[in-house]
Amino acid sequence: MKILVCVDGSEYTKRMVAYWAAHDEWLRGHEFTVLTVVQALPPRAAATLDRELLNSYYADEGDKIFRPIRAFLDRQGISATYLSKTGSVADVIARTAVEEGFELIMMGSHGHSELGTLVMGSVATRVLASCRTPVLLIR
Image (cartoon, rainbow, N blue to C red; front, side):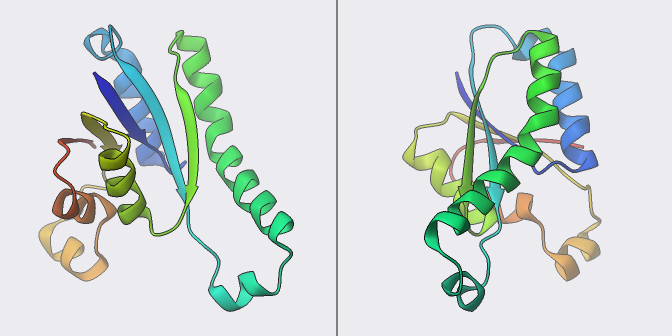
């Protein structure tokens, strides 16, 4: 199974990755891609920067998130491909899942109440609403 593991470096990501590593049934025979999405800088701010500098910034931000996750997965003997993209988080996750043929999206969730989700929104909720790929939420 081709699984897209979405990470943002938060405490919820750490819990999700620990859960994943602790369950052998998730480790056998699957292909994992760990995805992080770096929020794009506002267009006016981005326009003032050199394109190479901007791309370097996005790459560095993605690497900051991957560094501890990569170290943890390496210690657990879990191999994965790492992918960093830029844009609106929920849109990029949903689009990546569809365009690259993932069979499952795995992501951590804050576990907001219904009211909290209504007021604050939720990346997980938006991914569920905009993508036909099954989503496994771990909280």
